[in-house]
Amino acid sequence: MRTAPRPAPSRRGQALIILFGVLFLGGAAALAGGAFVTGSSSDQIDRALEREVADPTRRRAARRVVESWGKDAERFLENMQERRSELVQQFQRHDAQRAAIDALLARQDEAVDEMTRRVLDYRFELRDHLEADEWRAVFAPAAGQSGTAR
Image 1 (cartoon, rainbow, N blue to C red):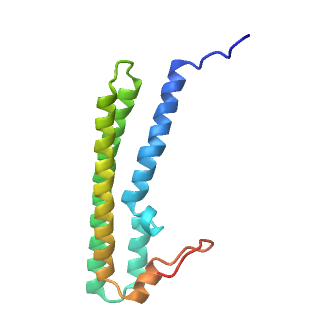
Image 2: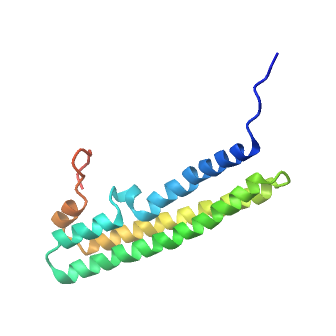
């Protein structure tokens, strides 16, 4: 019986890189950037704040929250990229020890958990600067998206 040839090593490595990029960076990027929890990017939120919040003092305060969130997200994503690179290197090594990979994954999980807490803090800080009607207008679902009462 004939078996199928094994894929070239470079293809297996590329598949690992793609898999980890999607699993670790994709989800983290959405979380950090706010899209996972708000359905909108920080740029979209900023434009909506400019359009919907008439009071300049509250608008500036809300925009500062979004700006801080964005900067925090950038730092988080840079760190996630470094962790992903370390993880890919470990997966590519034949002599890698499970303990080393487990430690990298634990650091990754801790970083995601911490960013999740910060995202929640940003959400409530932003809410403190908006009236209920402004909040609904800023986070209204885009045309064609389903949404729930906000």
